[in-house]
Image (cartoon, rainbow, N blue to C red; front, side, top):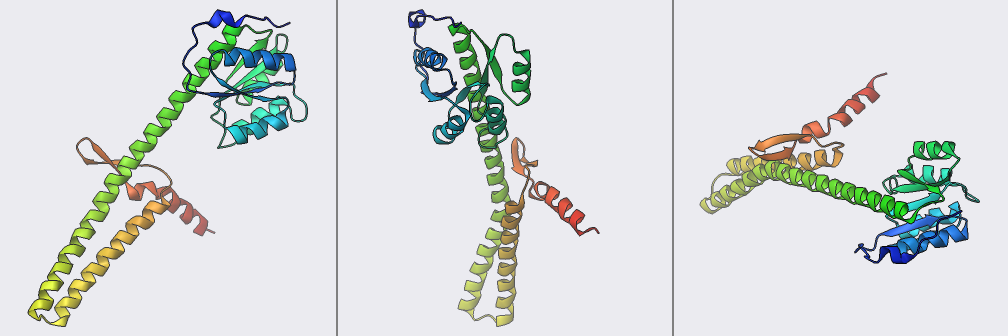
Length: 250
């Protein structure tokens, strides 16, 4: 039995930034009830009545959260949960599993497969909305944290590239100016060739920096100047060096 509540209980509709929630439930009555609950708070709702459709909806809609019944036709909820949490593209989508009162085993199995929370039938509207809101908030905070980490890493890379590339560029520029002066004064070719060699060496130095950056597998920081970090390029590719050495051992 499901507790029906009037949407009048939530007259203070919250402003939700159009978060999309996928409801995966084969029971139409429960599916429609959950849809009404969530729409009353301004969420976008996507529906799926079996696991096969659920996986397709995730690919098409990229939902912010999934409400997932475990007893589904075709592909069951356990398999759906395992596939979503096992994929790099979907593993951070929060999943709330829907279980029955008596099935402790369902709860444990769902959580072991990576589900983030669960609700029990018959459920209360307030409980569903609170759990959804909490998980969406955590998901949003996680996304902001990941973005902040990416921006911090990008800043370190920019400082590192500026440091590593700026010096050879200055050398190239200076030697090019010297060659220009030499040519105007009719200086011998040997001295000009020496300066050209310096330029070519600095170009190779830039190429090496770029090549190292393309092989970096981790982020190792070092202090550039007080308060500013830069990427330690050599340490950031150390793991690849170690792996290559292992491959050479017979």
